[in-house]
Length: 435
Image 1 (cartoon, helix red, strand yellow):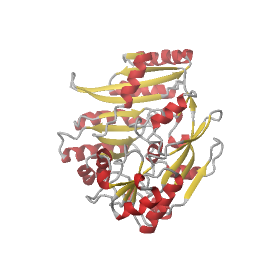
Image 2 (image 1 turned 90 degrees about the vertical axis):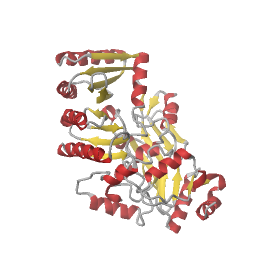
Image 3 (image 1 turned 45 degrees about the horizontal axis):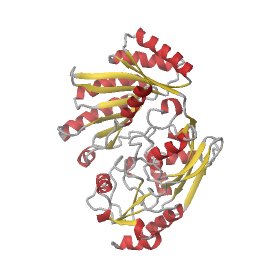
Image 4 (image 1 turned 30 degrees about the vertical axis):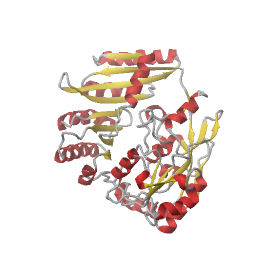
């Protein structure tokens, strides 16, 4: 056992400190992909309580150990490459439900609970957390908040910053900080909660989170409209301006090998009482008819199977980008995806312009991938947006600027990093501007 592991085991016990050589291979792989260096951390600490997490961070601060926080490691390689770290801290054992205020539609949980496990618990009371993130079966709520990974449901329910109403985190020095509360109307510390969402573990280690919940809907139906880029653009704009309230409204692009072209779809998901879903279905079908678009209706088992396939679209072995742009620029982005010929697929949220693009790196040269990504990024930036490279082979991340941030807030973000983490111990280099 390394000296670092030996010191930590006195606080956590040997069973909760894993030497690097004994870390499971899948987790090792994620850690290796997250680091810019070939020097690996000495061990991984797995505290079981917030008090233990605070003690571990206090020890790390005293020794100036650089720390890489993680949950189940499903998104550990997202974002910028991390500088050499001495210690990985996993919150996987912080997986308890602290409080479920059923009547208030709020829940407080530890950050290491898996999204799938939390949703199963909430479903017993007819409630759910309105997110559909990548890798939902393994992802933890802390990792989802740290990466701001909401998914298609933001169309109806907003992003994670709208759902998170309370946060507790452990600072770089081991002190525990809190903001917000368990009451929806309590907005104390609201800015701090926004700050921690999407910070990629660079400002503190999330330990406890309180969310606003929603009631599960009685009925669900998905409609898939097919057509060309202009028809998709026109139909999406009409839906946005109508009184329709879809839970999700996604524009998707897939390679159609049979026709040797891109297959484009506008996917609308409606949920609620059956009569309301039926009424909205009729309205959307009129829009489809107006633009000569075939419309496929999915109910019951077909609807469930379709949503399950959609949930599994993002894979861990692809080049994955998060994008954002004006919704009006989506059709031209889709056309550009086809032009750069990387075999990419995309899912873009019709009202916000956010979404993702992914492609398999096999068979593509680094030059082809860099060129294609720069063209996509340029289009997004021209449409008031961005392209961030979330996951990719390390060589590709070293060949292109991962975040592509072109704004003027780096100075402010640097000052915030200095105040929250003055010694750069937390995920150094992972966030925007190498913070």
